[in-house]
Amino acid sequence: MTTAVGLTAQTTAASVRAGISYFRETAILDRRSNPVVMATVPDVDLPPRARALDAITTLTTRQTRMLRLAGVALRESLGGIDRIDRIPLLLAAPEPHPGRAAVVEPRFLEQLAVQAEVRFDIQRSRVFPRGRAAVFPALCEALYRLASRTDEHVLVGGVDSHVDLQLLGTLDREERIRADGVPDGFIPGEGAAFLLLTSPGIGTRTGLAPLARLEGAAFADEPGHRYSEEIYRGDGLDLAFRRLFAAMPVTVQTVYAGFNGENFNAKEWGVSYMRHRERFAEDFAIEHPADCLGDTGAALGPMLMALASIGMKKGYRRSPCLAWCSSDQAERGAAIVSRG
Image (spheres, rainbow, N blue to C red):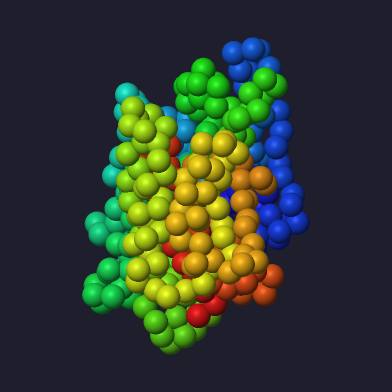
């Protein structure tokens, strides 16, 4: 995991547990000529872009930043693994802003393999360009591949960065970036996180100690999302919860929420919780790491899953944990992890 408060999963988890944030003014100015406050990884802490990618003139600043973030986190997730070339990667990626071109294309996976110097199975890998909730359809596909014995290991991850002048300018005009006079906004962030999933028992046989057990995942669409003209009722997250809980009789002890600092998603969380409150312990805890990390976009989902897993493993978060996220557009999703 690579975040503004840690270059590994363990350091990030410790920082988030301690409530440490790394929000700072940048050299980027908003339309009021004030510095934009962001949660970014110090450039000195990231490796440079791989020289083999220098010939690709079409790489944008944002794509290059994402490659540098993801390369570090990908290598961390595969430490001690053999036959990496047999492992596919299902990658959550940014959703395009309405009316804009896609942020990443399938060839981004090849570029990531070069940047990380890790030759995973590119041919059987896939990009999910659906924003914050993109990890949940990726998890569903990973679970299917593992259950059908198509694969013994599947990588699921996400990467995103708000270090993009055009994107920041658009969000600034929409008054979505937190600043003086914009209290209902978010702190732009960035980061990457990867989860290595295996079939039950495989980790033990290969000498790996699982952090947690993925009990299930689900996703759905929200008709009334931020950029839709439909009425916003919060039905998308509710449906994702309904699909998730239908498959497992659990009582949630901890929630890792996909809040990003804006009030928009609070409504659907409230709707979904009230409709399924019998599934939650009376004293359940709720965590929202964006308070420390900023809005990490498509990386938020796998970050929540990883932070929940580490917290349960170390004993400071109660099992099972529910993680959920909402994208700016239609995608909504949730998953449950337990100590196993």
